[in-house]
Amino acid sequence: MLYRNEPPFKVRGTLAAAFALVAAGTGMGLAQRGEQPRALERVEAVIPQPVAFAAVRVVREARVPRQPRLGADARMSSQQLSAAERLVRDEVRRGAFPGAALAAGRGAHLGLMAGVGNAEWGHGAVDPERTVYDIASLTKVVATTTAVMLLVEQGKLDVDAPVSRYLPAFSGGAKDKVRIRHLLAHNSGLPAGAGVGGTPDQALKQLIRTPLKTAPGERMEYSDVGFVVLWAAAERAAGEPLDELLRREMWEPLGMRSTGFNPGEGCARCVPTFKRADGTPVRGKVHDPIARRLGGVAGNAGLFSTAGDLARFAAMLASGGELEGVRVLEEETIRRFTRRQPNAQNRALGWETPHERGGSAGRELSRRAFGHTGFTGTSLWVDPERATWTVLLANRTFDPHAPNRIQALRRAVNDRVAQAADAGGRGMGVLLD
Image (tube, rainbow, N blue to C red; front, side, top):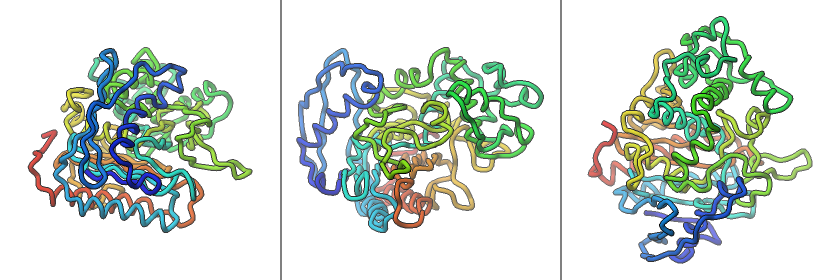
């Protein structure tokens, strides 16, 4: 496994890496709720590996759930993974964004975890396990879609049921024909966005009342409004806040301790994604205007996370819904939600699939791959045929010094990761058959 950071983290050392993993246990999720860390962690064994990698076994008190860790031996070409990292480093040098975090692996094995550049131009080196990014529309899959998947498995939500069954305010006329499936596939007939004002509750009511542009199921239009409505409907079905459901059922079991909504402007680990009128960087506050109007917790955007946390999430998906003995989703659920839908172009249920005319997946990922992107400069892709996954987090919306090439970068990085797996052999098998 490659583990790299620019100075002052370029040579982290085994003890530094151990402390980084330990510190992740007291992450943002606890801080934002005002809770105290529940136990001390101690590092029992530190095993040095080549290329500045530290394999650390973390032992917790018995009352704290074990945090799954990603293993080495990903059987991926280090040359191709290094080439993927160089692509990101070149964009930082070009001035596309101040820095980025990149992670890639195969199944439950980590091939690359790299921090490149800084949170802001000139300072705040990126640490992929600690640096928190506004992941923008990755919220749609890491939070909203996954919550729907969990609720479907629990028998609380039916994707073929009308939205009005769970959200009566979303009814009347053609809206009565809109199903949960339509919201997931972005072919509900709702527009891409809508202007809202007032309090978060008032803004939500306005979005739920948004009229349809087209008949349900007629054509695909990527819709933030649709995912706001989906979040509201799923929350009614769950009978509890969805972020509570996700924290209990996924983020905590997977050890995603730096993932959550509304870290707040005091979040020192958060990279800025925009500036105030006076030029002051804004950290810990969601970039997306709709999510901001809704108070920072929304189905379309608003989630914050690290490359380390999202690596665990992606590895779980690539491993058939389970990571190191912690099962989050059933394989069949993942298959069901990542199949393309009719009249939805390259959209599955919540997820995107490779697009024939480009997109962010690249040319090398299989046709069964699935992923998503975020406006701030984020992306996550999983290829079940190779069992590979890639996470790229950047803050391209913060003071770029060069034109935007994030889509081309995503494609090129995904291609290198696929080539790294092919060069390393297909001995790990095909998952999610």
